[in-house]
Amino acid sequence: MKFKKMMYTLLILVLLSLIGGILYMYHPRFGTEATGKRLANMESKPKYKDGAFDNLEYTPALAEGVTYTDILKSFFFEKKIRVTPIDTLPVIKSDLHNLPADSNLYVWFGHSSYLLQLDHKKILIDPVFSKYATPVRVSVKAFDMSYEYTAQDIPEIDIMVITHDHWDHLDYNTFQEIKHKVKHIVTGLGVGAHLEKWGYPSAQITELYWGESANIAGFEFTAATARHFAGRTFKRNVTLWSSFILQAQNLKLFLGGDSGYGKHFKEIGEKYGPFDYAILENGQYNEKWINIHMLPEEVVKATKELNSKHLIPVHSSKFPLAVHPWDEPLIRVTKEAEKENIAIVTPQMGEIVSLDTYQKYPHWWIGLN
Image 1 (tube, rainbow, N blue to C red):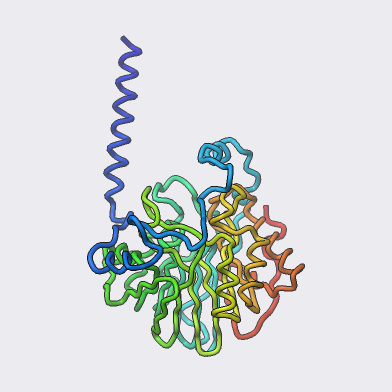
Image 2: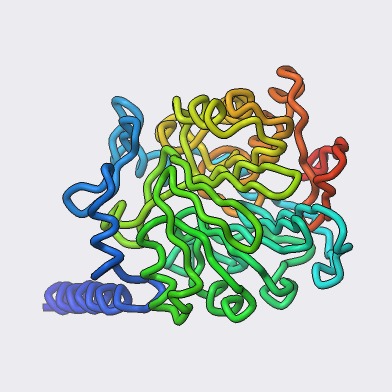
């Protein structure tokens, strides 16, 4: 009798958790799918079929021979060495509201969030200032930082770029706190449906397909392919993931977004290069999902194929989304860049970097546990 009562209680708890999870999926933070003219535009594109986009190059989510069971075993049972730093990571608190107006600048906030100042205008990329990188606010917690940037630190933004709609690149809470400061948004097809649902004006959103360009606030933006995927729920690829070519008056930048290594880097370099700076994702990689995230050595190879003068690595130092040591991405990419004679830019988070003159930066991660 006691056992039956325990089983009934357990069953009720499971059902309540299931119902709660289903109800939570209706929260606005999950976004919405495209409809009407937006959906018709998506359906007209060559890599949209059966309700989803696909990569130009064959891109299975997992490497050959790897199963999702392997991923779960690795996540729960593989020994994790220094995935999260013991020490508080140093972050420079900069006054972003009073940047020198006549300088082209870069400021990194950790992971893939960074601010550009180009030609007297401010461009914000993939801002995530939340403490978590998943919809379940108990997992993938941000590292401890000596200073945490918030929406209040961010000045008025002329253009915001969203490379894709994954939670660690498009954060609902951050967006709600910052949208009133943003004059225009550039993103991939379908992502605008989320933004409109969250109260952002459709007239201020430019959605691009790979190869399409738009002139916005004096800049030319061109969407280019990336080897990745998208989605905020279990349904994948109902929006587009992209990299972007950003042409300013005197500088050309490649904003990489999430991507595995592939032939597209050489093709983009040949068609759109050379670049002054390639800002590429370097971190949260694993051999098990090598098709959708580059290893550090591949990041340097991609920089060379893009024909870029400088490499700025991002996508590290904030969230533990993989099982490598937290500082390994920076250690490996700087070592490979030095070997290949690539000029690499590795500032501290929050540090103001001049894009007009190149300088080497100390390896700030050395000595941190």
